[in-house]
Length: 287
Image (cartoon, rainbow, N blue to C red; front, side, top):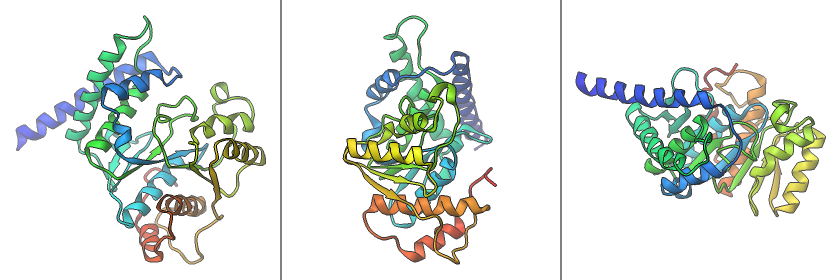
């Protein structure tokens, strides 16, 4: 048993060492490398339904809550989150549990082999980034775990984010504020446009209740251009609902999560499942 544990620890250490080594090459926008990675891996993102969560704040909380709600309604659900608090394994979850070190290490090993093939086809000075390797490993593991649906949190923005390679059925915009203006643009409208590039033709866009007017205008324009339906979440869940997640803002996040889960399932949620999820879902590191 000790030998098995040590082998798992060694494999996880090698996976984390590889991912950390990619930090040296920084962040580079573009989806070409990510698409090539996923092609080499056999298009794992096509093997499950998906919900894409973008926004300036509340993404991780909302992602966890949507995943928990879908699980409570009988769907085998996975999620991809960022950043992590202690270990990279926290970023990939199946049925409300972090993936095991062994499975995470195996997924990263597959992504590493794919990245080596992709890197050989790229121009000098270009190579797969850390977030691309991590995201492709996450999609690979979610497919291998046979999830029916994955709730995927975007890393930065949306348009050029590595997660913008999933054929999501539902897209969720939590809110939009002035952040990362160097990369996303100087105005709320610019930032909203970058985030809302994840909206798929014929998809369903679920937006938070307190969306900035400029962001709402962009959402309406993108929805019209892509024939996507738009759902505005209520400001709060039903009165009297007890949430385990602390903070009044989490009530807004939970109401948004309920709207997103309902849009995905295309039917009203079970009130008892809502109550059980609200009372049990913990959001680490969010206060």
